[in-house]
Every structure is written in structure tokens, then in C-alpha cells.
Image 1 (cartoon, rainbow, N blue to C red):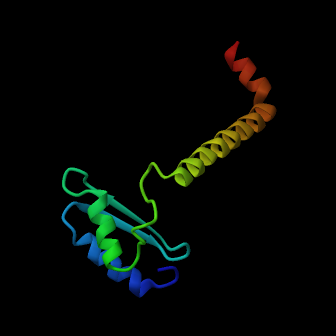
Image 2: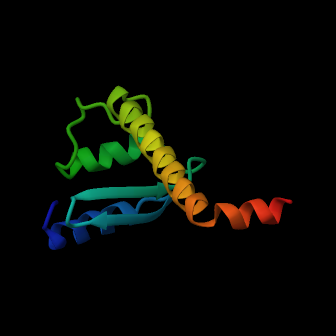
Length: 105
């Protein structure tokens, strides 16, 4: 669906029409689709089935949160986030270290 807003609109309508789907967000630039749903009313398998029926998802591909690739990417994102926060905090302390020390005393 990347760069295909008409197709994305059709898919959004199809998914939003499902009982339990609360929101659907699509980013045309990346082709990403995020589906928010109430797990008490609908399950991920039903959503995947609808996407497969629309020809948008290969049922043979892993899509669960246990997907090893997703796990690695998530861990890498956490590490990068921690490093960025550490760097920003270090810069802030370099600039305001004396002020921070004075405030603590």
C-alpha cells in the first residue's frame, strides 16, 4: 500500500468495519499499517485473516509479537533510546553541572 492512498482508504474502511477494531492508522510513506483493537471483542488472527483476504498479508510470514526479528528490533530500539537519553543528560549536565550541584547542596 506504500504510496497508494486509495488502496489504503479501502483497507482502513474494511478494518474499521470489523467489530472490535477501534482505530486504524496508515502511513503512506512507509506503507505501515497499525490496527488498534479490543482483544475482548476481536483477536489478531481475525485481523490477519481479513488482511490476507485483501491480499495484503502473506499468511506464511510470522506476525506475532514473538517474531524473533521484531524482538531484535525492539531491543535495538531500547538500547538506542537509552544511549540517546544518556547522551542528552550528559550534555545537560556538562552545561549545567555546577547549577545542579548547587541545587543539590
